[in-house]
Length: 142
Image (cartoon, rainbow, N blue to C red):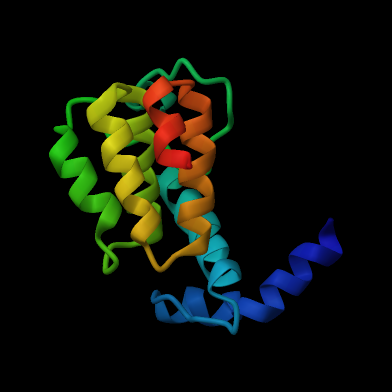
């Protein structure tokens, strides 16, 4: 495990990320985005020490990011999810909030993310659609 983390650190140049406070892209977008998610998760949890700030989820998974607030309208979450310029961390927060909202509007919004350039995001969208166990998600996943 430590060796794997060392390799990821070498590929993404995490030291540069910390110094420059900007994403540094390695050769593999999925690895770079995974590094960004990990660093932004650490930053988020350092700034938000109390878990009470997070909405409850009926899913028992350990998500790589907290969901966006449940009060966020679905159309705003959809817009963030499909925004290729947004940070991957914020796109994930929108994705998990849509999953938590459930229903056809959320399934449709999540399905739109399959048009993303990010293979990592599309993988996670497929996973959360499966978690939702919504009959409408079956059509989206086909």
